[in-house]
Image 1 (cartoon, rainbow, N blue to C red):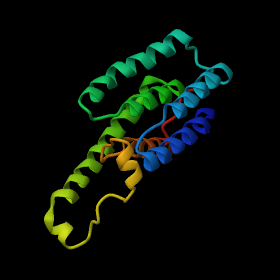
Image 2: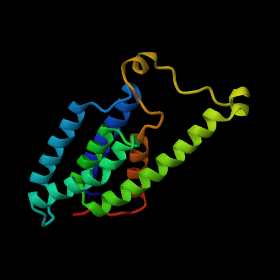
Image 3: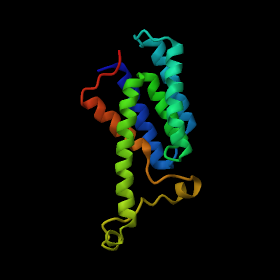
Image 4: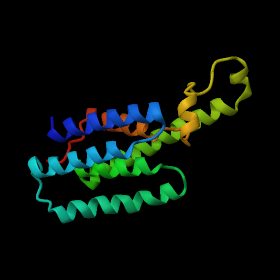
Amino acid sequence: MHIAILFMIPIMAAVVVSDYVYFKIPNAMLIWGLITVVFYNLCWKTQNHSWQSQILQIFFLFIILFPFYLLRALGAGDIKLFCILCGFSDLGCMKQLLLFSLVLAAVAGCISIFLDYLPIIKNKYLYTGPPKRAEAKKSYRFHKIHFTYAMLVALAVLLMTGNKMPE
Protein backbone atom coordinates (compact mmCIF):
# COMPACT_ATOMS: atom_id res chain seq x y z
CA MET A 1 0.00 0.00 0.00
CA HIS A 2 1.36 3.38 -0.96
CA ILE A 3 1.53 6.06 1.72
CA ALA A 4 -0.47 8.51 -0.46
CA ILE A 5 -3.54 6.28 -0.10
CA LEU A 6 -3.43 6.81 3.66
CA PHE A 7 -3.79 10.54 3.00
CA MET A 8 -6.21 10.47 0.06
CA ILE A 9 -8.95 8.26 1.48
CA PRO A 10 -9.46 10.17 4.79
CA ILE A 11 -9.52 13.50 2.95
CA MET A 12 -12.08 12.16 0.48
CA ALA A 13 -14.20 10.61 3.24
CA ALA A 14 -14.29 13.86 5.23
CA VAL A 15 -15.20 15.86 2.12
CA VAL A 16 -17.98 13.42 1.17
CA VAL A 17 -19.49 13.64 4.67
CA SER A 18 -19.33 17.44 4.57
CA ASP A 19 -20.86 17.50 1.09
CA TYR A 20 -23.68 15.23 2.23
CA VAL A 21 -24.48 17.19 5.39
CA TYR A 22 -23.95 20.79 4.24
CA PHE A 23 -24.21 20.51 0.43
CA LYS A 24 -20.82 22.18 0.04
CA ILE A 25 -17.11 21.54 0.47
CA PRO A 26 -15.72 23.99 3.03
CA ASN A 27 -12.59 25.87 2.06
CA ALA A 28 -11.12 25.22 5.51
CA MET A 29 -11.23 21.48 4.80
CA LEU A 30 -9.55 22.03 1.45
CA ILE A 31 -6.83 24.13 3.10
CA TRP A 32 -6.11 21.21 5.44
CA GLY A 33 -5.94 19.01 2.36
CA LEU A 34 -3.47 21.41 0.77
CA ILE A 35 -1.33 21.41 3.93
CA THR A 36 -1.41 17.60 3.83
CA VAL A 37 -0.26 17.64 0.19
CA VAL A 38 2.68 19.90 1.06
CA PHE A 39 3.55 17.70 4.06
CA TYR A 40 3.33 14.55 1.92
CA ASN A 41 5.48 16.02 -0.86
CA LEU A 42 8.13 17.18 1.61
CA CYS A 43 8.32 13.94 3.59
CA TRP A 44 7.42 11.00 1.36
CA LYS A 45 7.50 11.97 -2.30
CA THR A 46 10.15 9.81 -3.96
CA GLN A 47 9.50 10.69 -7.58
CA ASN A 48 11.98 12.81 -9.44
CA HIS A 49 9.47 15.63 -9.70
CA SER A 50 10.36 19.13 -8.72
CA TRP A 51 7.96 21.52 -7.07
CA GLN A 52 7.67 23.33 -10.39
CA SER A 53 6.46 20.22 -12.19
CA GLN A 54 3.97 19.45 -9.41
CA ILE A 55 2.58 22.99 -9.56
CA LEU A 56 2.38 22.75 -13.36
CA GLN A 57 0.44 19.47 -13.07
CA ILE A 58 -2.04 21.03 -10.66
CA PHE A 59 -2.39 24.13 -12.85
CA PHE A 60 -2.88 21.95 -15.95
CA LEU A 61 -5.61 19.98 -14.19
CA PHE A 62 -7.27 23.24 -13.11
CA ILE A 63 -7.23 24.49 -16.72
CA ILE A 64 -8.83 21.21 -17.87
CA LEU A 65 -11.56 21.36 -15.20
CA PHE A 66 -12.38 25.07 -15.39
CA PRO A 67 -14.68 24.74 -18.44
CA PHE A 68 -16.71 22.18 -16.45
CA TYR A 69 -17.15 24.86 -13.78
CA LEU A 70 -18.25 27.41 -16.36
CA LEU A 71 -20.83 24.93 -17.66
CA ARG A 72 -22.03 24.39 -14.05
CA ALA A 73 -21.20 20.69 -14.32
CA LEU A 74 -18.74 20.86 -11.41
CA GLY A 75 -18.60 23.07 -8.39
CA ALA A 76 -15.56 25.07 -7.37
CA GLY A 77 -15.00 22.77 -4.38
CA ASP A 78 -14.91 19.73 -6.65
CA ILE A 79 -12.25 21.34 -8.82
CA LYS A 80 -10.16 22.34 -5.81
CA LEU A 81 -10.49 18.80 -4.42
CA PHE A 82 -9.31 17.30 -7.69
CA CYS A 83 -6.30 19.64 -7.65
CA ILE A 84 -5.48 18.55 -4.10
CA LEU A 85 -5.73 14.89 -5.06
CA CYS A 86 -3.43 15.61 -8.00
CA GLY A 87 -0.82 16.70 -5.45
CA PHE A 88 -0.69 13.10 -4.19
CA SER A 89 -0.25 11.52 -7.61
CA ASP A 90 0.45 12.36 -11.20
CA LEU A 91 -1.68 13.40 -14.15
CA GLY A 92 -1.99 9.86 -15.48
CA CYS A 93 -3.69 8.66 -12.31
CA MET A 94 -5.79 11.83 -12.13
CA LYS A 95 -6.87 11.35 -15.75
CA GLN A 96 -8.21 7.89 -14.90
CA LEU A 97 -9.89 9.20 -11.76
CA LEU A 98 -11.45 12.13 -13.62
CA LEU A 99 -12.82 10.04 -16.48
CA PHE A 100 -14.22 7.35 -14.20
CA SER A 101 -15.74 9.98 -11.87
CA LEU A 102 -17.38 11.78 -14.79
CA VAL A 103 -18.88 8.53 -16.06
CA LEU A 104 -20.20 7.63 -12.60
CA ALA A 105 -21.66 11.12 -12.13
CA ALA A 106 -23.29 10.95 -15.58
CA VAL A 107 -24.90 7.62 -14.73
CA ALA A 108 -26.09 9.00 -11.38
CA GLY A 109 -27.46 12.06 -13.16
CA CYS A 110 -29.36 9.98 -15.68
CA ILE A 111 -30.84 7.87 -12.89
CA SER A 112 -31.78 11.02 -10.97
CA ILE A 113 -33.48 12.56 -14.00
CA PHE A 114 -35.27 9.29 -14.70
CA LEU A 115 -36.55 9.06 -11.13
CA ASP A 116 -37.52 12.73 -10.93
CA TYR A 117 -39.42 13.02 -14.19
CA LEU A 118 -41.07 9.68 -14.62
CA PRO A 119 -44.49 10.13 -13.01
CA ILE A 120 -45.21 6.41 -12.87
CA ILE A 121 -42.38 5.84 -10.42
CA LYS A 122 -43.31 8.86 -8.30
CA ASN A 123 -46.95 7.79 -8.17
CA LYS A 124 -46.04 4.28 -7.06
CA TYR A 125 -43.95 5.66 -4.17
CA LEU A 126 -40.82 3.84 -5.25
CA TYR A 127 -38.91 7.09 -5.05
CA THR A 128 -39.59 9.56 -2.26
CA GLY A 129 -37.33 12.36 -3.44
CA PRO A 130 -34.12 13.73 -2.03
CA PRO A 131 -33.49 13.50 1.71
CA LYS A 132 -35.15 16.14 3.88
CA ARG A 133 -32.46 18.49 5.08
CA ALA A 134 -34.34 21.77 5.11
CA GLU A 135 -31.68 23.84 6.86
CA ALA A 136 -29.03 23.01 4.29
CA LYS A 137 -31.43 23.56 1.42
CA LYS A 138 -32.22 27.05 2.66
CA SER A 139 -28.61 28.01 3.35
CA TYR A 140 -26.78 26.78 0.26
CA ARG A 141 -27.48 26.48 -3.40
CA PHE A 142 -26.71 22.93 -4.42
CA HIS A 143 -26.75 20.55 -7.32
CA LYS A 144 -28.74 17.35 -7.23
CA ILE A 145 -25.66 15.29 -8.04
CA HIS A 146 -22.85 15.35 -5.51
CA PHE A 147 -19.71 14.82 -7.56
CA THR A 148 -17.70 13.94 -4.46
CA TYR A 149 -19.61 10.65 -4.20
CA ALA A 150 -18.52 9.70 -7.69
CA MET A 151 -14.94 10.76 -6.91
CA LEU A 152 -14.79 8.58 -3.78
CA VAL A 153 -16.25 5.54 -5.53
CA ALA A 154 -13.93 6.04 -8.51
CA LEU A 155 -10.90 6.36 -6.23
CA ALA A 156 -11.84 3.22 -4.32
CA VAL A 157 -12.51 1.22 -7.49
CA LEU A 158 -9.28 2.36 -9.13
CA LEU A 159 -7.30 1.39 -6.04
CA MET A 160 -9.06 -1.99 -5.71
CA THR A 161 -8.52 -2.88 -9.36
CA GLY A 162 -4.79 -2.67 -8.92
CA ASN A 163 -3.94 0.72 -10.38
CA LYS A 164 -0.65 1.62 -8.84
CA MET A 165 -0.15 4.95 -7.25
CA PRO A 166 3.03 6.57 -8.45
CA GLU A 167 6.04 6.03 -6.21
